Each structure stands twice: as structure tokens, then as C-alpha cells.
Amino acid sequence: MKREYTVLYQPIEDGWIMATVPDLPGAVTQGKNLSEARSMIKEAVELLLLSYRENAAKDAPGNAIWEKLTVDVPAA
Image (cartoon, rainbow, N blue to C red; front, side, top):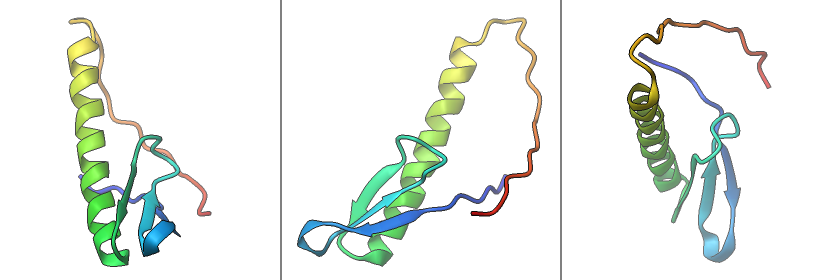
């Protein structure tokens, strides 16, 4: 399943780049340059979403109903 997220890149100390995903609190990382920051935030988002999914499955009661939800989000 493919999803798109907006990533915010900001220069921080010593020339590093911080990457955050405003729609996913906790998706924060950094890289020595933009290329590395892009790679790191992709991995951070993948791991964060996997963790959310695993925790939800573990915590859901046996009679929980799971379904897909599609929403339209206005472009920023």
C-alpha cells in the first residue's frame, strides 16, 4: 500500500538537516545532508507505521471490526 506524506526539512546545527512529517507525530530524524535525511525519514515513517499497526493489533479486542478508511486531505 502506498501513501504520501509531506516532509519538512530544516537545516540545524553543524550543517545537518532535520526531517519531520507533520502528519505523523514522532516521525523525526536527521541526516548529514538532504539525501541522507530523505533516506532516514523514509525508514523512520515505515518503522513508525509498522509499530502503530502492531500495537493496534495487539491491543484490539477479539471482537474488534477492522476496515479501510479513505479520506481526501487538502494539499498544503
